[in-house]
Length: 209
Image (cartoon, rainbow, N blue to C red):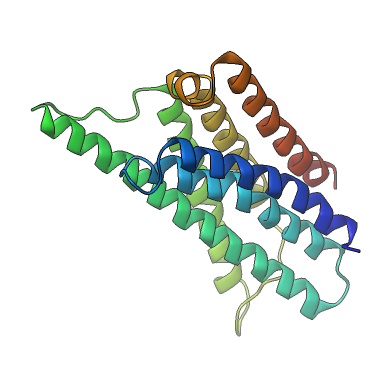
């Protein structure tokens, strides 16, 4: 039987993966450039993020140094995948807007909506958190890499990035895209509820643990 920690990550990850699959299907991935935006960000922030956070929680409980290091490295590797998904999704929406505006002889406008602003803030927080992690890992030990360190700023930035990403997704779910693709208010409320449940399942143990 899987340990409790694994199950606590598996449930929100399964829910997030289902939502990411719905976003991919509704945006007709991979038929359009735009479709990469909701698909990649759904995979990164809804499906992968719960496991990234769970691994760092498990690392704190581990008593064996090697096990602790392995869990921190798994956390870092999953976070790297989340970053790749984020950058890919952001590039897709940026490029899509540029091409659509050029086709109409207009200048593309970026970061106009609350969805765009929240997404930009989440991405910036992710980059800052990753930068701190990189510094702590590479430059706080005389020889080799240091995987066993603690930093409150890194922790808070990561949590804030995750929360803000959730807010960005909820914003678009309850906007025009969600109304058109999720069956109106009932579907919008259902998806919003699932995202809120996922975030609470992930963050409450992380904050209190």
